[in-house]
Image (cartoon, rainbow, N blue to C red; front, side, top):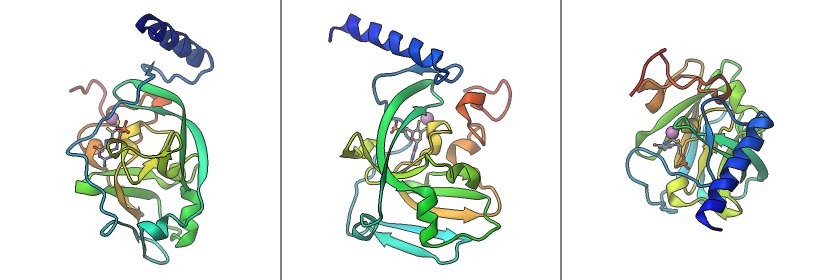
Length: 209
Ligand SMILES: Nc1nc2c(c(=O)[nH]1)N[C@H]1C(S)=C(S)[C@@H](COP(=O)(O)O)O[C@H]1N2
Ligand SMILES: [Mo]
């Protein structure tokens, strides 16, 4: 495709998404898959990798990579929205449905928040009711391939109904909590909820970087 064709295709797609009500306010459509994170891309080591669940769970558990790969997966096509104003549509993911995953260990009735803990200490918080939606995954494939290292290999959360900073790359643990624990970007002035359709970008009106 020529450069002009790409520009025109992007515009046409964006107009279609706006018309279908799928383009949140202040967003524009991208055909690329931008990479955004703090710090360096970690290197996956299968021998030391594990995923843990802790906090208000019936049973604390951990899986190594081989064990984790045995858990049944689903495939989902969703739209994703980054607070830096790009949206990407009809992205195909495969992973474990979060609401099925919690059945493996059970959570206490007091749980209100889920905190994702990642390599190098990045964390992000999402309300339990959002996590229990039917589009939230512990995702390890994008477009039929294992995630690229920059996009979170081997494992990330996928929370399509929130800005993409809440989709935690290089996930290592999930904490189940009765109290909220704002994470990296939430503590840096971004909105605690981050609903793209409500344009919940920053925690204070007029706050900017
Ligand atoms: N562990 C970790 N996860 C992270 C981040 C990060 O810095 N560290 N950045 C977040 C932000 S701000 C965005 S926009 C998305 C970007 O995901 P992508 O690089 O796959 O597009 O990852 C999110 N998940
Ligand atoms: Mo972001």
